[in-house]
Structures are given as C-alpha cells and as structure tokens.
Length: 241
Image (cartoon, rainbow, N blue to C red; front, side, top):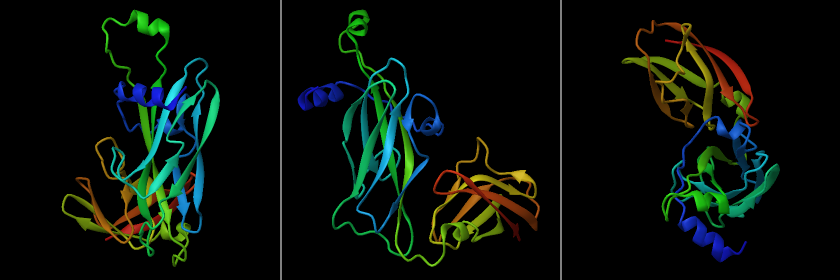
C-alpha cells in the first residue's frame, strides 16, 4: 500500500475518536499498556498496538498529543500510520522532540492516541447505499507521562503523599509529590467517590483538586488505590480533616 494511497484514504475517512477507558485493555483493537512512562534519561520508548480480530484489517494512526482529543506535544510516534493484519501486534516507537523544554522537578502529562480505521473491502463498497459514505473508526488514548531524573521520592512513596481536607460540597485533595496520582479507588468515611458522576480521577503534581460529594462527615478515614507504572494498584490509608 503506497503512502499516497494511505494519505488519500485517510482524508476520505471520518474517524470518530472516542476515549474508551476499557479499549486499551480489551480484546480486539487496542494498546498493550494502560499508560506509557517516558524516563528522561531514555531517547525513546516502545509500546505496542494490537489487532486480535480474526478477520478484520485496520489502518492504524498513532500520535502523541497534549490532550486526548489533540494538540501539539513534544514527542513523535513512529510509524504514524500503518496497516494492521488480523492477529498481529505492531511496535510503535515514541521519540522526544529534540530541544523540547520539559519540567525537571515534576512529571509532565501527554496522551498516546490510537485511531483504528477498518479496511473497506470491495464487498462493502458494492453494498454502500451512497457514494462518499464514511467509514467510522474506533479510537482510544492512554496517558504518556514524562518522568524527570532525580525526583526526591519514589513513585510508590509519592502516591501516598496526599492530604485530604473538607471543602464546600466535597473534599479537597492536595498532592505534595512530583508525580501524577491516578485513582483506581477512593473512599472517604466508607463512601466511594469514584463513580459515573465523578469526572475527577487524577491529581497533578504539587497541585490541588476538589471532588464533589454531598454528605461527607469530617474527620473521616480515607483509603485509596493508586495506579502504578504497570497498571497495578497500590493501596494507601489516611485521614481527612
């Protein structure tokens, strides 16, 4: 498949990029990781994109972006566009842009995105009701975290460096560490704060965030699980005042 054909094909396809939390770890098309950690001392890192379908062929488009929906980032994913056969895994190399200025005292967050466009077969073309009909693709995004050298504590210790205080209509979470803390679970006084209505599930380094939850009583015991580099969970306990 020539590059000119691929570019022409992509321009004619409308891709719906839906950030689907389960897609990265589900069967079918996805990314073989829940997050990518980019250590500052490395020139590049490698992750893999899979197609475990038995028959479907996909055109895969990958990139590193500022947000799940787009924006420039100081990293390049290569190859940016490739064909994925059924039952295969394809390696993608992520390279830091030379001269990019990134924070040295804390982690920086970007997103590794995947768009998977199903191949249009002759049978599909013949059955299409109208010329110019679009083929909708699937998409997902996972966190790419740039980690500087020489941070004062380990990630395992940093994930536990949270302070919890009462806030209007909820609880304030202060992250005293240089790491992004992503929650798998967060309970305050026995109440699970992570639910379908809760949009916040992460706290940036050296910053505060507020989770809304009516009816919390303070002081309260707090327990939380933080997601580590491999996608596992580390458990911590504390108190909200």
